[in-house]
Amino acid sequence: MLFTFLKYIQPTHYFQCFTKTKGSVFPEVKDLPEFVLSKLSRDTKYSSERAADYDLSWQAMQNGYVGDAPTYARFETISVEDNYHFIRKYFNSAWVFYVLLLRVFSFHNPFKEIRAWLKTRSVNRVSVGTNPIFYKDWDTFNSSLLKESPKVSVVIPTLNRYTYLHDVLKDLETQDYSNFEVIVVDQSEPFNSEFYKNYNLDINLIRQEEKALWLARNTAVKHATGDLIALSEDDVRIASNWISSHLKCLDFFDSEVSAGVFYPEGQQIPKDRSYFALASQFATGNAMLYKTVFTSVGLFDRQFEKQRMGDGEFGIRVYLDGIKSVSNPIASCIDVKAGTGGLREMGSWDAFRPSSFFAPRPIPSVIYYFRRYYGKKAAKLALFRMVPLSIFPYQFKKNKPLLILGAFLTLLILPIVFYQVFKSWSLASQKINKGPLIETL
Image (cartoon, rainbow, N blue to C red; front, side, top):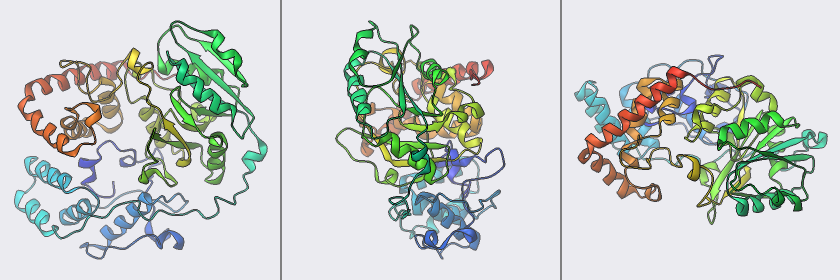
């Protein structure tokens, strides 16, 4: 990674990893086009030119650079002071202090760490993504892919959400793109086949007795007759240009994956997701990809049934394979967050908050994913960072005072938290020993 200290704050981020071709996503600054450089600001307060270059590369990625400039294949070690400078500039001061504590308690020279921490106190924090790169040709782009009108297979697994499913099917009826089928894998109980008869859609209905989300998606992909797969859910709302916007993104950026953006009902798209960028995450509730991507990396891993992080795991496989995935704010969707059905009925709805006090924390599939792709050390750093913040319920996850209180509360109930994490780690080990359950297409 560009700066060493990112491994403490973002230990399980896609961009921490090099792809199979030993490349990164971070562009070499000397090869960036002028219209991109004009959006960046060189920081001359770093002690080395290399650190200043890495900072510019970071800015380019955060501001939405999607291009063909050569990327760094290796990163040189940057001084401790420059690392503190970087994290002070882009992260909350609480995380800077957190890194200091980790460094001191992991036997790094405390005098050197504290001195560098103190020397960088004057560094002001900068909000990333406030000056995004604008792709001026997007609005006038005449997509040849849209002209070709390839068939799209829209995949929707559902479980006991007919009321919500009705809304998204009605949204699909209004699409400005017509060459698509809808593959619904229905696991509902009771099953209502009559529900599907009144829609003006090409619906391929698959009844699945087993309550299994990833099996449902895999089955749908296998049955898809389209060259492109659009992944959706049964509790979202989509605009009439949802399919066409995904197709246009694939064509405009010459990418194989268009990763759409979610935002909660009644809110707006988050600012840091409101512009095009290389996708740093993958969500199976809003994406379009060529079917050949599944041929390259396999289907979804069924180790994640009734658990969490299955889409993240698929996303890292796509990233490691060197497949370009673009975060697409135009093809956004509203997350209705249905209060019933789905994973709420057949498994773990939240990744880090267990269903009971002595249940594993986090859900074992999370540690399975972390360990498999990032290693044990990074997995432990991720747990150390995330577990204390998960003590309070999900609805308080953006309440900063409660998050801080939760970190202190973790110390008070440390034996219980340790038991929860140890149990999850052990169950994850069983998953790792069993290996991935990934079918090829």
